[in-house]
Image 1 (cartoon, one colour):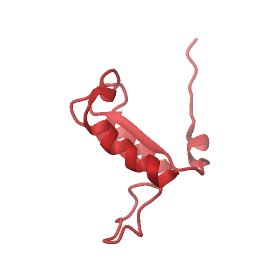
Image 2: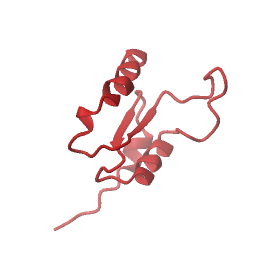
Image 3: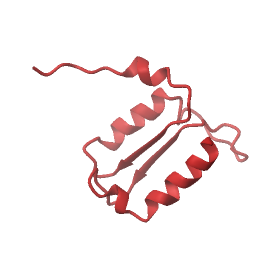
Length: 88
């Protein structure tokens, strides 16, 4: 039996930096990824020229990738490494 899984409250309650990392041909649509990012407070305002308006969370949607091959993209480490360095 399939059950609904609404994790909205769990997502909103996250306090650590979160990186949402998707392929543009992933099983999760980019619009749904953006909804998750919005729940984290991302994308709600301009980041400002100095970055002061940016959230600690990140959203990366890599072009030409799927859930299965996203780790093979040369963009993957370019997106993940700076996030991990900032979050450390």
